[in-house]
Length: 252
Image (cartoon, rainbow, N blue to C red; front, side, top):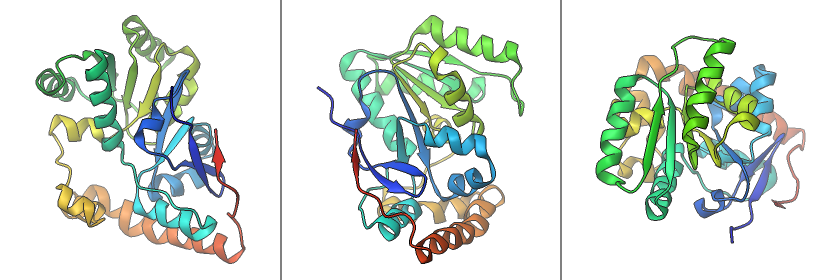
């Protein structure tokens, strides 16, 4: 028996507020994450916003989201990063002798992932596919990706194409995908492969993971944190002043 999916409101979104065991739901489950950057981008991209809103589970992947939920609704939730979800699902699959499929990234990164998985989670059957690197996939590209996933029929499909492309793709093709759980986890592919190093747990516990990533990758991360951080704060404070955001907790 699975745990109920508990959520708390954040304006137009229902944010997951349970523990990771609640991500093992019955039926096909689409899991996405939201942070201050994706929240701001979604305000400018209606298709992306809809994809996030239509998630079966939307994880609070950032302390800014956790703080915004508390400020606007008075509810508490806990940050759950994509990497945390990834590790939890792998551990569960290894215990059950399940299967997972990695869709996205380069062939080199996927090879590193499968090599590490063979050592750490030997009971998992693993499949991979590296789609073409382009801003928009053709119908032929989409069909090829669907066929690769569906031929494998994974228990869990990990999608890593960077936001917002991965969330849009997963939502658009959810019905056609033969997978029980579909997760858009982006940078986790690189974290697990070791091509990008995630900050040490020490920094994560201090809630400074964002700062360490900024220091390590300033060219790629500066806009996400130094520009969109203040934009997010302005948006949330504006909603607070208007008295928006207070709704009851929902249990699905």
